[in-house]
Length: 473
Ligand code: NAP
Image (tube, rainbow, N blue to C red; front, side):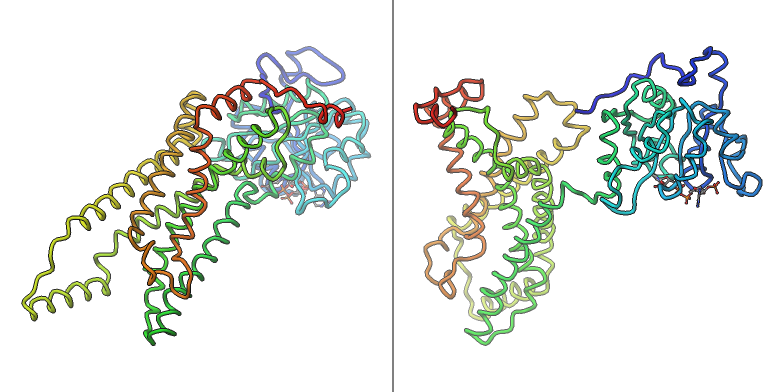
C-alpha cells in the first residue's frame, strides 16, 4: 500500500559522510543533464531558493540555463552535491560508472522513463543502482512532465511518487518535493521502480474495459435498430426513412446503452452477494473477472451518465426537427380539411406525463450519482453517506430509468406489429439486464436472505461440511 512520507524535520544531509547540518544545507543540488527536464527542474528548484549545479558534457557550450545555476563537468558537479537528479536517458547512463568515487555514498534520483514497456530486463533505477552500488538510488518525479515541474502543482498533477531502499534518502527527496509544493507518495522499495516507470506509458487503463463495453453495446444496438427500422421499412414497404439514422436512431441507441451500462454497474454487486451466500463466507476471494468488473464500476457509471446526457440533448431538439414540424402541420391541415378534431385521451396523457416525469427524476438521481463519484465530493462524505448514495439511490435510479423504459413501451409489448421480423424492439432487449438486476436485488432484500448476507458480511462463516473438510485436508 502507498503511504505518504512525512518529510518534517529531515534535512538534506550528505549521505555517507554525515557532516554538520549547517554546512550541508548550503550544498547545491546537482542535476545531471541540461535537457528539457533538467532545465525545468533546475528553474523550479531555484525558485525554491535551492542552489543548483548542472553536470554537463559541454559545460561551456550548453545554451542558456536558468539564471543563478552553475554548470560544471559531470565529475566536478557530482563532487559538490550530496543529492543528484539524473536527468538523462537510460542509454546514456554508462559514463556514470567512471564517476564512482565522486558519487560514492550520494543520493541519486532516477527520473527516467522508457519509450515502451519491457524494453529492458530490469528497471532503469535498478540498472543505475547496479552501475553505482555505492550510491542510494531513489526512483521519483518520472510521472511529472517537464512542463508540470516548471509550472508547479497548481497547474498540473500534484503527486510525486518515490521508491527506494533507503528511507533516509527518500526522506531527503520528499523534503525537496514537498518544498516544491508536491504531495509525496512512497511506493516502497526500489523493486517498485518498474511499476513507476510503466505509469507514464499507460493510457486510461481503468477506462479500457468500460469503453470497450460502451462501444460494443452501441455498435450492436445501432445495427439492431437500423435493421428493424430503416431496412425493414425499405424491404417491407419500399419506404426510404434513412434520414432517421441521425436523430431518431441515435436517440433510440443512447438510452438503451445508458440503461444497460447502469445496470452493469449494479450486476457485479448482486453476483458477489449471491456468491457469498452460496459459499457461506466473505473470506474467499472473488474470481478475477468479478474483481476487475467491480473495480471499473465508476467508469461504467460515468459512461452510462454520458449516454443519458446525449439522450436528454437529443430529446430536447425533437420539437425543432423538420420531420416533426412537417408531421404536426400535415396532421393539423388534415384535421382542418376533414373538419375533425382528435379526442383528448386521458390515459395517453397520464402515460406520457408519467413517462417524462419518471425519466426526469431518474436523470436527476443519475446526475447526483455522477457528482458524488467526483473525488472532491466523495472525500467530503463519510463511507456510510457514500454507500447510501451509490447503492440505495443508485438502485432507485436504475428502478426509475427501467420504469421510464417500460412506460415508453406501454402496450407495445403486447402488440404483434411491434415484433418486426419476429424480433423485439431494441428497448425491449435493453430491458433484460436491468430487469434481471432489479429482480435479483429484490430477492436479496427478502428478510430471510438479507439476514444471512448481513451475517456473512459481519464475518460469520457457515461451518464446513464433511465433504468440504475432506477437500481442505
Ligand atoms: P533530453 O532533453 O534529451 O536531455 C537529456 C540530456 O542528457 C541531454 O541534454 C544531455 O545533457 C544529457 N546527456 C548525457 N549524455 C548524453 C549522451 N551520450 N547523448 C545525449 N545526451 C546526453 O531529455 P529530457 O526530456 O530532459 O529527459 C531526461 C530524462 O528524464 C529521460 O530519462 C526522460 O525519460 C525523463 N523524463 C522526461 C520528462 C520530460 O517531460 N521531458 C518527463 C519525465 C521524465 P548535456 O548535453 O548537458 O550533457
